[in-house]
Length: 210
Length: 210
DNA sequence: GTCTATAATATGATAGAC
DNA sequence: GTCTATCATATTATAGAC
Image (cartoon, rainbow over all chains, first blue to last red; front, side, top):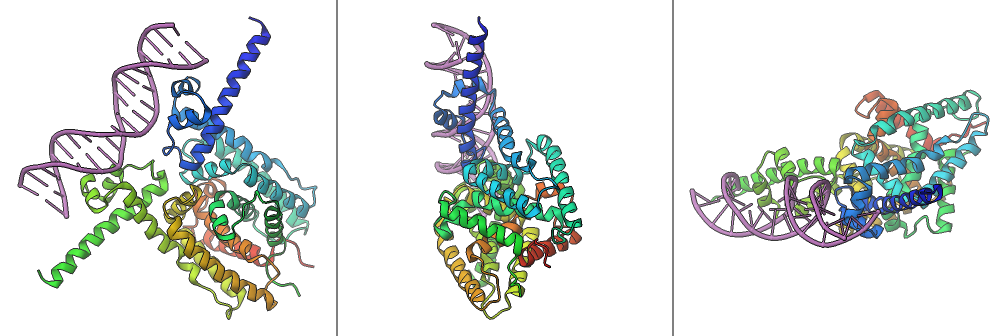
């Protein structure tokens, strides 16, 4: 068996796993883990249920794989900003990236939200450690900005929670946002307007400046 | 049969329904609708499964009752603020009430979040209409404040989403907040600190004022 | 790797006695 | 109103042929 054939087959297996994970992600984020049957996932991924169980040994196995995929997408933008940057620019950029994630990966956002709400029983190990470290690094950077007088004295932790909650809201509560405004982030005009408003709020607040 | 006996029995029935609803709320908010069995709810409410099904004809019936109870608790503080009030005071008060809700009713917050994320299939009728009206009223008030020069020019809708998301975050993502900070809103000091930070952010932003 | 059974079980719901 | 017994079904998972 040639190397090429080997790798081609491995590629196909990976593709199939990916297709299944994508289908599962979408369904899990809509109906939850227990609200989704393997049959549904199999149908959506265009494979048989038995075949699905050939690629993923169990439902929980599949679920964990979906969560692992999700974490990669989700924690990625957290890598950004360093103390050398201008804070307003860096934070503005972070808000933009997070809002783009809410627009382009709402299923990831929702499933992450669900998992955290339920106490993250299945990924607490993978999540807690890297998350704590990433946040600690950011808190450090924000602290330096404040010391340098480049930001108002704000608790860095609460600032981070604020950035997360305000941006993710447009993915997780998109149903509510749409019910109230009639718009979604898919609408470019609404996206820009949302971005500017979030940035305006976080940078300047709502108190009128004399 | 006397009026008294009638009302006493009705009272008992109501109490039992309430106990079941509370137990169901807690479990549904932790494991989701499909992740919770009637057996679990019955055990938590200290009744038999058959008895539970005597009070609520079906699982969906129970779930809808839980959601209706939840909406009452959840939409209540939205009634507040009118244009005559000072906006900073009114909004500050609203933030406090919402954060108290996140502290005292996290199960309601989480289940509401879950339901919205899944498209609110079972309460869209009860929710959409009153929500849209309430928000429209508030948008009106905020608009008047802005016209009077009492607030910066901010889109009222995005301001409302901001108030919701930042406060509810501490209930829905309490697991994450605790993983990162080691604290919960149950800690009075952390509660006060959180409240002041949210208010500070929304009122003043993070840009240093010269 | 993929398929056809089929096992094993959990769980929502009902019937009928008391 | 509450109980025991039971039905009906959905769904995860496995065995074994091809």
